[in-house]
Image (cartoon, rainbow, N blue to C red; front, side, top):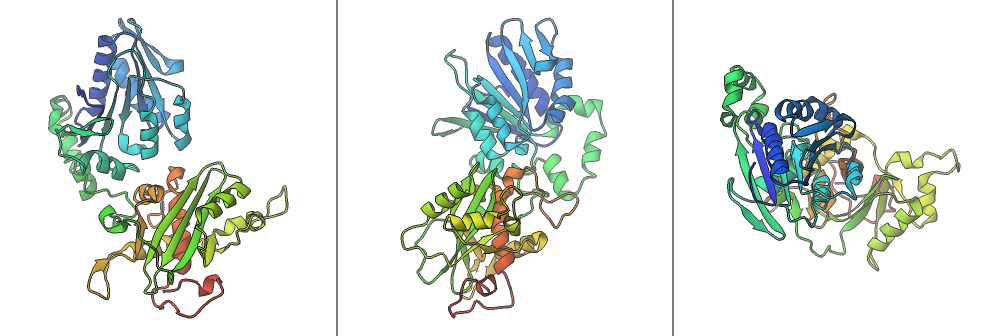
Length: 424
């Protein structure tokens, strides 16, 4: 963990001593840089209290640092501080909005979303001249598997410093053999790892990043499904599909070719919008002369509100947007989306999926591959972290509504009723 790079990831196999390495490196930094400030994060507070807190209490000499339980902070005799924190909900990053840290440490980085990570990078700042770094440990798997793999694993070989705009980045592979103390103290640990499923065994025993058993859309590939923007032909039908709540508006514009290929060509992703503002922003995204053939919204927007007696759909209509109901069948919608994402041989012999996404749709690209299987219903997706669900839910509404594998898309004009829209 003693790396000088801006971003360091120590990750891979379980049992490599990653968390203890973080704690010892934090202790070294606090002693070497009097008055320094560090933040060490887990996704939830219970995870902190089960792992890092008791480990630090065993490791840190009480003569040089005291732990303040109420503030979850180690105060060192030389003025340094090590704070323990968490980011359970996406919005929890705002609790650190005005803070300044020299080092931020993530334990189990793949449990965090990419937006949480990038926001917290902005909290690494200060004028004290101390090194400014982010250090992370993790195993493969979890909601952040794809973005962590893309950022640290796919972009560079291990044990090699990579330069990028603004700093340097390093990936250090973790192996069970790196921790001889565990192997000596618990000789059966490796044997228990070998009893796991093949995917979990490769991830936790061998530190393999190419497999993620919990990922719902394992067929998703940036190389295959993400494309550069291009001009949409005028004869393609266009649809707007949304997932709306005060916490987030996720709007996707999708075009479909006459032969049944769909492309997500625009997205709008905004929190905290009332209906009139959401409608105004969606209309502002559309170009002059752009004809939207159909606008889809989930059935819950037809529910009447007690305070007004009117539904969200009626309020959208007042602001100039008329919606029709999308299908709300979750499992059927996800299965339809699987079909659209599945690469198949086309009429010209090329293998391609029936759904692609412009690379400008950053939030859909970020959240779709991050969805995990629901542990209670593997046919469905997990609904936590909730921030990951908005854009995929909007896309699911489209897929569930328009997908009919046995029908060809009609060539005649239609009146924008869902039953006549985009069948293929």
